Amino acid sequence: MTKEPRGGKTDLQVRRPRVQKNVTAAIGLDICSDRYAVGSVLPRESDLCEMYGVSRTVVRESLKILSTKGLVHSRPRVGTVVCEKTDWNLLDPQILEWMGPRIHDLDLFGCILETRRTVEPVAAAFAAERATVQEIADLDGAWRRMRDAGTDIEAFTRADVQFHEILLKASHNQVFRQLSSIIHAALIYALYRSNEAVEDREEALLVHRELVEALRLRDAEAARAASHRTLDLAVRDLALNGASRGLAASSVGAERFSPSFRGS
Amino acid sequence: MTKEPRGGKTDLQVRRPRVQKNVTAAIGLDICSDRYAVGSVLPRESDLCEMYGVSRTVVRESLKILSTKGLVHSRPRVGTVVCEKTDWNLLDPQILEWMGPRIHDLDLFGCILETRRTVEPVAAAFAAERATVQEIADLDGAWRRMRDAGTDIEAFTRADVQFHEILLKASHNQVFRQLSSIIHAALIYALYRSNEAVEDREEALLVHRELVEALRLRDAEAARAASHRTLDLAVRDLALNGASRGLAASSVGAERFSPSFRGS
DNA sequence: TTTCATTCAAAAGTATGACTATTTGACCCG
DNA sequence: CGGGTCAAATAGTCATACTTTTGAATGAAA
Image 1: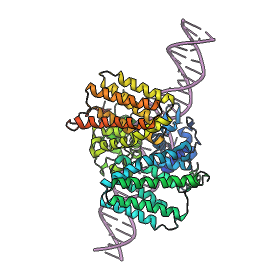
Image 2: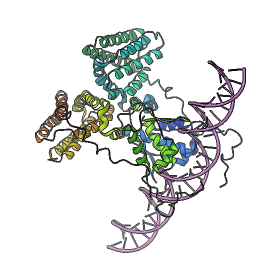
Image 3: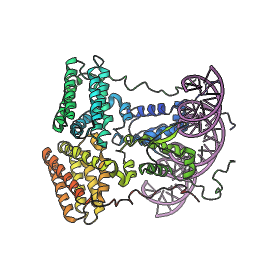
Image 4: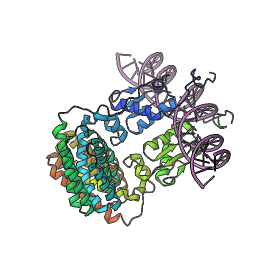
């Protein structure tokens, strides 16, 4: 009832770093990992405050973010409940990150691949007609980075992601561009299942090159075809060695932000 | 500067209704209407509190929501700035609502149409293979509601929106399903530009019927073709009478939530 | 026993004030 | 004139108190 601003530990360590992102990610991760089941109600705000050692302000704003992403829904007297997965905003990059290898559940990975096969060839055709010279140059730059990645498979994937993001951007369709997030997620997690053989990357380089050239020649049909071949390659890779492998990507989701991390 | 919890009007009307949604919508609308320009910094939190007559808690949580939607970005000392339009989450239903007739700016309407023409025929083909009998029945129900709408063009549009949402759902591709929001927005705003002639609706009814029948026969190719015809019709309508007409949808965005609405 | 209205309590929603951390820009020193 | 330091401005965090909403328990009436 008096003041006592920091509850006894005023002596040392009175720092309050920015913890919002951590709390949000922790709760979001718990939801996307099914640690909080769909339909269940998660601890009340005051309990979450204790669990993570933060104020109610932070907890509430975190829940607000998750609510905006469609993960939870709050109501007085009842609490904050986890929404149906059909309400989740699956195009949200953070949700995809929190789901980690679990994007294979619910056939999400397959859905993403279908979407890519539907959209990317069309985007390539549009890009052939609309891309600026700068965008084509950027695309070429991404291709060079893929070529020069050598044995660094992670750098190769990073450049690959950029390649496809630039392509979507070059389609000059703002809705297509919003799909970058799922392509990003798909490629990142495909990385762990893809064939690391050099000859496969050589083939990928080849079709990507054809795509760039088609854009340069403003040949929409060639671009569409090249994009199709790109995706066929990805599908083949996945079909070849994906099914047998286990999920080796458990380390991707970043370390968990355990409750009471600010213990001392 | 003393206590005075409710600024003098403590006597009566000390109610604090749920006002967060209103504040969020007000600021969001101001941003989407370019009243706050891209790159500009909006009033600081304490000023927004005064403007809307709410506490900082509400303002902060509202800004948090807008931040999650990619509309703004907050940084200490600098304030809350409006993000580039390329960062906006254009698939967010609320943003589309706040943009209102302004979806015609930035060619967004055209982008949406392109996306529909790319995705919907594929979704229809998938639906022909995967839809449950219940989903086909629902689709048929939506079609009946279109048929029975009579002269009520709004009811017709509402049923039309439902039709296409059910179709996307029936494709059993979760990513496609996320695109419902843009179709919703497109149809709602196309409503105000579309031809109200009866014969046009008759034709629309016909092709929608063909689509339902194709699904019933599990004929993917026929479904794809019918979906294409549906969209061709929409495009033709828009091209015929859309261009000449002005934007008659100014009343759609709902009334503005003006600052200090809680004046008394 | 069933059904309806009343009351109660639990949870989120709002308000307020104080303090902290971060960052920018200006000022000062070399 | 350049670079480093300091101070002010603003979002971020904390703590507490209060209000509104709403489900459930309670009790009365049919």
